[in-house]
Amino acid sequence: MTKRTVALSREEFCQLVARAIDSLPPAVAERLANVEIVVEDRPTSEELAMVETDPGETLFGLYTGVPLTKRSSSYGMVLPDKITLYQRSIEEGCRTREGIQARIRTTLLHEIGHHFGLSEDELEQAGYE
View 1 (cartoon, rainbow, N blue to C red):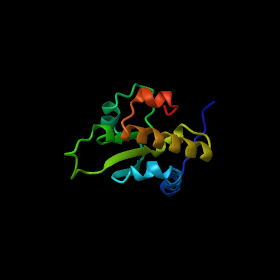
View 2: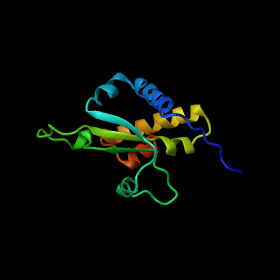
View 3: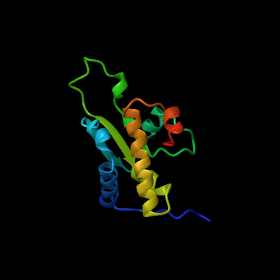
View 4: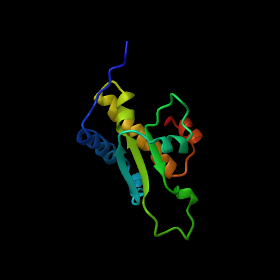
């Protein structure tokens, strides 16, 4: 038996992303001033290699940039950091629209954790694997 997936339009998916962003505590949202949040269909092979994704493992999101904990006083005049959410990967991992919403929020929080300087192990311990 195959798992049924829900496919949303890009507009519907982005609305769920916006809802997840709106649900962030103000103290967190304020620290995302120079972070772009984008939606792509799937990660590229280069992105999968960059994070050393194992075969069979799904990448739902990716943070690229300089974590807040790694910035020095000379940090400035740089492009925004970026959080990419992978729509098709997320949809394929969920059976319902509610599941997609929950996965978007969890993935967003996971990638924000990287922006704040948390490691994969720390995020896993916090329940954001």
